[in-house]
Each structure stands twice: as structure tokens, then as C-alpha cells.
Length: 71
Image (spheres, rainbow, N blue to C red):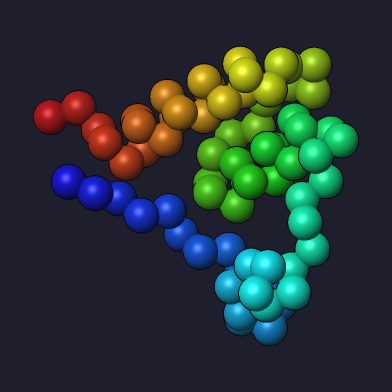
């Protein structure tokens, strides 16, 4: 089985991508950028003091629970 993540679209309906002129993510604050991506994907936020690696582990588990529920 495969699952594709949803496209993120701008206000004009175009997908956000470099080829459509979307700005780059600000990587100076990685947790903030990851929180925004998680929000778009419908995942819960994590506390501001969470390490990025721990946040990613949390979201991987949350994603699996949402899109690959146990039988």
C-alpha cells in the first residue's frame, strides 16, 4: 500500500513549489517550520521547547495512527 501526502496550495490554488515561486522555508527555527507543516497535515502541535527530532518522532506516530490504523 502507498499513501501520498496532500499538496499544500497557496491562496491562488497553485501548489506551493519552487517552480511556482513559493518562498523557501525558514530553517533558522526548525521546530517552527515543522509545526507549520504538521498543522497543514492535520497533526497536533507539540510544546515549544520540544526538540525537533522528538517532534518528528511524535508526528510519525500520530501519522501512522491516523492513516494506518490497527486492524
